[in-house]
Image (cartoon, rainbow, N blue to C red):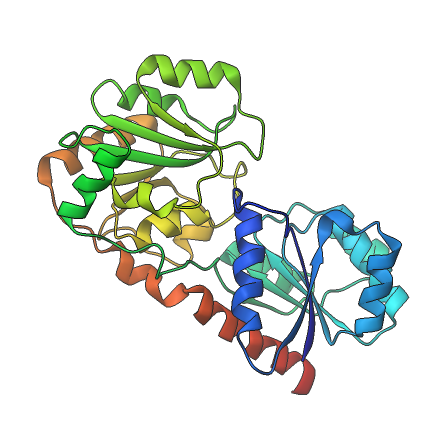
Amino acid sequence: MRISLFGDFSENLDEGLKNIAHYTAESLSAIEEINLQKIDIKRLMDLDLIKSIRAYDPDVIHYIPGPTNKSLFLLKCIKTYLGKRPKIVLSCSYPVFDDKLLNWLHFKPDLAFAQSRYFKKRMDALGIASCLLPNGVDTDKFAPISSVSKVALRKRYGLKEDLFTILHVGHLMDKRNLGVLARLSKKFQVIFVASDYITIDPIWLKILEDAGCIIFRGYNPRIEEFYQLSDCYIFPVKPGDSICCPLSVMEAMSCNLPVITTNFEGISTFFSEGNGLTFFKKDEDVIKAIDRLNQDKTSACTRSSVSKYSWKNNALKISHAYRALLYD
């Protein structure tokens, strides 16, 4: 099967959609029957790139980010240019498009991987075949470590060894509900690994630093170590301000950390609350949950929930879906 995989393949895996594109491509490439062409979406207006897609003559065009109104319009144009042959597949990690546009374009993708029950129902209503599939996680890289190794990592990064440590990974910007991190910093060791893929908000940077948050800025290729040295992970971002199934939540679960997160439907569709996974509605709920974790010292069992969604397993499910589209 010849697959043209569209995604952000630029350097540094410092952003969620980049990671999804990279690991999906890597895992699909390992499947013998798949011949993969990577298409960088930042070059989609390059005529030579479009010609290379036509020369490749893909069986399937699989679009990773979005989808958005713009990307659906581009896919319609590309399919028209290539002819009716390629099947169009969408990974819907952050869908922000108008359903009416599909009717206006007379364009219907052949398959959508839905990251929530709500979005699957939306696709069903549009007559688009869909199946539920969350983002994947590198379960080898993101793995729990011993308490001795945890202390050693804290020493390496200049952190307090015996203080309850809370982690957040993501963009340091407004509209991310970061105030709760400042509140937690008064009592606990709060670490924020802040990507600079999107410009860091200087106002929030100062607020968090003044509150005592420890900020690690920029791309860190050993990001797993921050999960491994932490006692719990918090994802306070509100739905709509992140991808449907946040990668960092799954990475934290893969490290078997207790996770306190906003109730994203892309998480609750695949994972039940409990055994270390806590959903919250108000910031006060976060404070109470952290206090309980600090006092109880109970072990989480989050890794067992997420392990079946390794990138390798996801790639196998995706390849089966390709095969069904092409040969069934």
